[in-house]
Image (tube, rainbow, N blue to C red; front, side, top):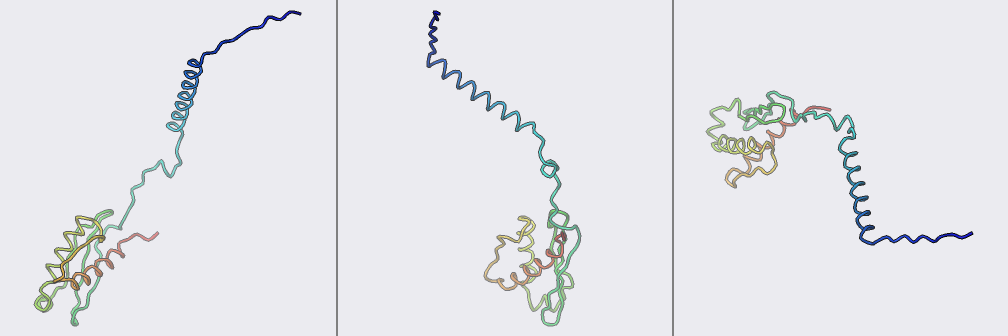
Length: 146
């Protein structure tokens, strides 16, 4: 029984190349699996998020027995305009900063589409705070109930 001894010589260079090709092959297979595997039906559909229910919403302010309505016009994902309704001449005379403060707030809110980060000057601080509160109340009415 004579057995012939075979000697196999494997070079380190070949082992490194083989290892790299195996790793690249595994990465390629994983990439293909992740690319072509179907995602969940919730992730697959791109349903538009609706921030508001489109319409005209108002909130009331009572100033010296005069009622002023702050009217906010929204569509499904934008705040379009904000204005004062039923603004009497007496209120305009007694509170001359009401309309300019609302115009400044309206520009900021329609640009940012949010009440976050709205700034106002110290001259009309309290007027702006009251108007922002009324605008927030009107926008709360526009949020869809779930």
